[in-house]
Image (cartoon, rainbow, N blue to C red; front, side, top):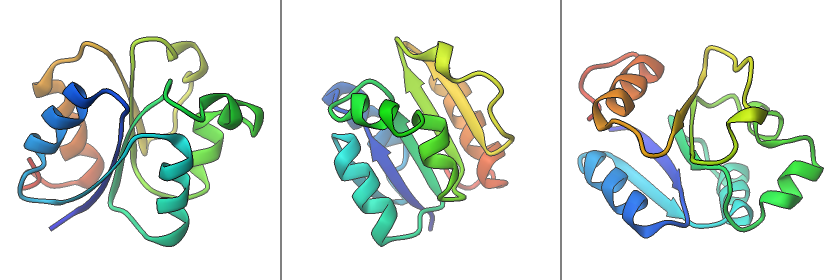
Length: 120
């Protein structure tokens, strides 16, 4: 079972993604402050995160979302309808999906990042 940190302030998106990961352990947060606190206290197999949610400006001031998350050495899928400009040249352990996105493409990214077909 994978441990997944899911961060999105849009309940429709978080509910959808939580259903996709129904057989996995999912920790759900709604702000950057909560997300970073969870990353500090625990290790995750995957982080799925919205970008523009409460606390976003603070993260931008600390180097940007990619730079803040890369230090945790955890695969990340960024999902957003607004912030794709700041996510150029992502490392192999990170992907970006523009909202609205295909669930099949999302699942494909999860499988590639976690190197398994048994995840979702």
